[in-house]
Image (cartoon, rainbow, N blue to C red; front, side, top):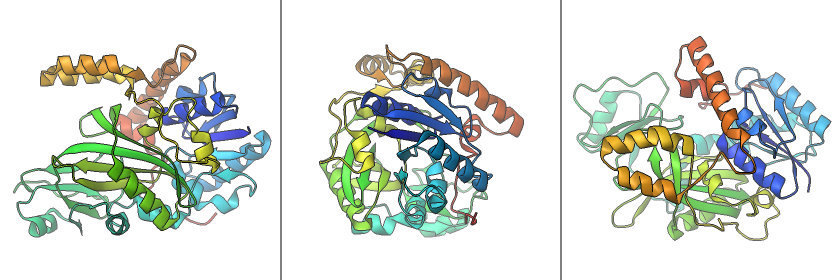
Length: 385
């Protein structure tokens, strides 16, 4: 088939991609700028390649990536995390013959903005909630008054720094953090849904929707229940066609009690919807532009990060008095990390967490920040190299 290099090897979605590519006959390499034993220890992976952080030294990142592509004769590069922005920005400095599953940098900049993407979303029927760009709490209060409200930095991820005020902004609410512009968005109640898609030159080549049934507080989910949502697929098809998109693209949604869908934000990268596809589903062809039709999951089965479900998930459900629901969900889902034929990634994940914990202590930041700080991009200009 060919040779693929999957970036962001620290992420479970990278492991999932690696297993699928290998199962379908590709030689798989993974790379990252932090330890990525999670995917590197998988028997689906031929080798792990260490790269310099694209955020802190883009010149070295591009040079090392170019060397890896040439040395291993890579045919396709697939990003999974926010290194996608740096990969897109410096695409012209990489070997010309390698295919890269990314789109134009300015297009990704627009999509990553929780404010700017809304215009196109509105044109395509996504019904985004009423929003305004603010810098202070007082601006948000003046605009929305006591209307239920969500506040989030224009560029952010995993729900970090998001403030949800279902009863309006409190009088004693703390001032907004120094993260540039914030989006003040009318709060919409309902069920959270997430869509994950792949497109190639404006054609939808893969698509799925899931309900993040269990999550870490207001942050990342660890349980992914497949859902049917024809309205979401229709929107995504229109959206990727409208902008001629190539690559992986994801959206967060709220479905109200009357079935009305509102798109909340866009992430032009992989998310956990990758896990819903089986090893035989043709995501490699979708990423490479060779899928003849839109690939959808062939098995409508929930997936989960079992280690989190059995720890934080159990604690949260016991606290909420919903042990029966937790047990039911546990029995219905299969684990993302450990397969009977590929058991080492779960041990690699544990080792990676220890490494991130050490980074967190060294840099006096949270574990989540330590796990992503070297690849984050918050809309700032990226210099020429």
